[in-house]
Length: 195
Image (cartoon, rainbow, N blue to C red; front, side, top):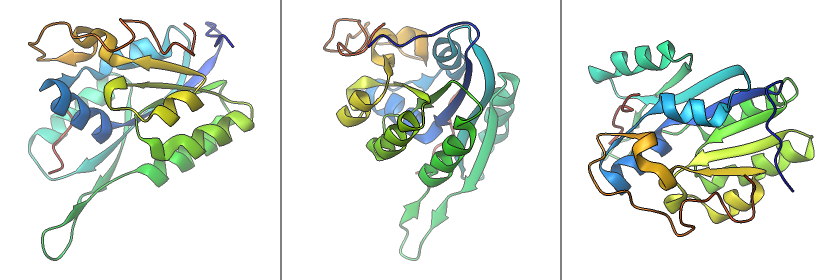
């Protein structure tokens, strides 16, 4: 089934910032260009709301990162990194992002998730059941195959690293589908480090 992207559609974009940041760093040694990600995902449609979910670590560069996101029209929601006795660290927004997606779904035609996290599969299935189009934009090389299959559309940022990354110096590596979107689907700045 072809996904429909019309100019009149109302869309919301929810960004799993740490997921994109760590994937870009681990796969390519580069930073995510959140402006390019937002532009590609929205695809000229009417953006109702864009939210980046971020874990704060009290580093000096965080303020400029949040300001850069705000300049792009992306709201930031922050949560402190939890450090447990013994040094273990935890920080994620999965539940908060899912709750926000459910809350906003009735007000938009499409919800765009910028994440490859397979934990969002039940959320995608629920939103689709409720009649909301769900689109994913992420790095396909590290994305959950179940998330890819569940979505109405999947944009693989690995297909054009230079477009979605800043500081990428490698060759234009292609994903296994030779620059196309997922075969079953039709056609800024660095996030603060949480380690």
